[in-house]
Length: 434
Image 1 (cartoon, rainbow, N blue to C red):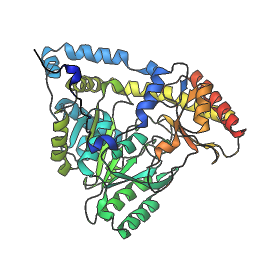
Image 2: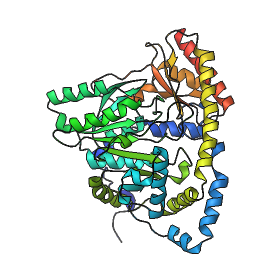
Image 3: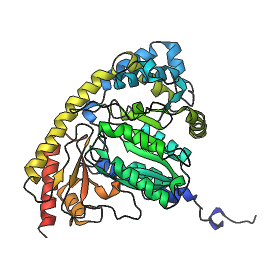
């Protein structure tokens, strides 16, 4: 018997799609892996939630209640729909109304405008796929959520930065940037404005109340060649510790034609459930469901029914209150440690957030906080990790600012925060002394 063995058959090199290369070398995987694998390093980088506050008892109670009813249990164990379980969408409408301080009727939304997703990250990816072709433009605050910058890169879109301050994205700078793009003949490429409106990742800044309506007005006025949508990411909305309780940007959109609202229960309840929702303009419902249907024809149905039970049984809000108390202590511990260890250092500053999980720190301009810079290496040697601020600025014509870092107080204990900040200060002082 003759013939080639398996070993002699040539293996061709795989040819990946263009989008595979668009999505190459994303930092989030590296940072998440480091947080899990390096147990001796105190991670002030990972945006994970506090392990000790995960709602074990509430989830167990909801699970038992759900499975005490065989008919509901079978419905939860069956395939769901692309849009998501109607039972949870009803609860989501009520939850959103509570957040907005109004009745469900005053929301003026049809039930089919609410889509359930695998966390809010799926919404970000779906909207990018739906609206952006390679070369299209999404306007973002500088800095902004670096994972979404990776999502934009993954579809070949351009993230164009808009300067921000302690009140969020500057609407005057947004107007100037749109005018510049129009002069350059690129206005038709602008499809999206992305804003994290509450306690932004990475800065902790919230978009000021007076800028919310202005943002909607600008998007409408500049929708000259095509509709410019606003994608409002409210992932951290429920983690408010002090400061004003602001209405969403979505609530400022009376016509409901401009703003896409996305929210998640990952930060306020459990990331393991991976349940989020989006509220979309009516004309986007069908195309978004078509796109989502091609991907999963429905996010995890059991998780949706479990969360519906949690909301129906009133188990969600007590947990949120517990989280707020815990995270407020941690935020205060990080701010106190920053004052203690960095207060005397020249050109070092940080922002005091009213909520969320992050503190944004700026160092002297000569300190490069990037992965390849001297501070990251020295900080690792000291046993502490942070997110380099340069990741949060879009790559493009402008050089990203390299002297910032994002610090997370979510996953560490109060004691761990104190030790981590002391280690970070030693690393900064060592680099400054060179």
